[in-house]
Amino acid sequence: MADHDVIVVGGGPGGSTAAWRLARAGLRPLLLDAAVFPRVKVCAGWVTPEALADVEVDPAKYPLTIQPFTACGFAFDGARHETRWRRPASYGIVRKEFDHHLLDRARAAGADAREGARVTAVTRARDEIRVVSERGVFTAPVVIGAGGHHCPVAKAFGEVSEQEEVVIAQESETRLPPECLDALRDGAPELYLEPDLKGYGWYFPKEDVLNIGIGVISGPGVDLPRRRDALLASLRTSGRLPADLRIEPFRGHAYVVRRRAPRRLAGDDFCLVGDAAGLARDLSGEGIGPAIRSGILAAEAVVAHVREGIPIDSYAQEIVRRYGRGETGWLGRQLGRLPDACARVLVRAMLATGATRRHVVLGGIFGMREVPS
Image (cartoon, rainbow, N blue to C red):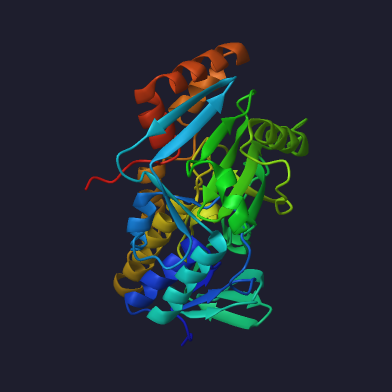
């Protein structure tokens, strides 16, 4: 008999949430992650009220960095628009802190979480999954892949295609000294849509932390450093980033947008969650919320499979119901059919219209919605 009912590969929000829910349901999950927590995680740290509710984190009681936002600026083609809400529509967290908090909670619930255990191979052996890691070889009847864009479970079972659409990003996150806090002007984040509509940049203050970054769709001729430098120059010129403020070096990462050649989400003995499944929101890349929700759904499917024999494929069906089959969304299809000049006109009109900006762009694409009291 295996020592564990399920192995979770990856300890980010999706993996730790899955392990937490599995342990709370009485199963014996093993979680493996290559890093030692708390570890630096490149991410803007934008989390929605819905995601915090899913993971049962009360913003008022969360003991680490958290910044509620009731406003957000959106700039494109020389115009800037601001949307305000009566209650917080999003929160800023620091991923290094947030991920460690969730992993510790999974461990407290009974999950066997092992850090510094990079997984090097995932194979099927008779009726079990065999997971080879730097801290040993483990087997279980089921494995959950939560290891991000390069997840070894996705590579082994997810039918990863070279035709996937990949977004590349660079971000800098700086902890600011007290004398620099006034330079932030206000606590509202800013989004800067790229002129060619292939990505966007952001300016994201979170208490005494400042995150700046840019992400674009990877492809021929995409010069990410040039776009990054242009964003920094614009922030310096506007005064949002003081000339004498030194920020941390930029770090890069990549993730899949599940709009082309989607990965296989589940099988008889596995499922993929979060970025391993390519669940980042189309156009915005917001991935924490989908990672958490898919971790919950994966845990529910695995519990039903272990205890009642229900096929894990039910998880894939639920993901498709919630997030679609991976095709480009309606807005993306419309923009793709238009000449570049016409697409920019349409985007300008959408951003200039308060209701469309609030509900379609910020609500639909970024998941920013205030929670009713």
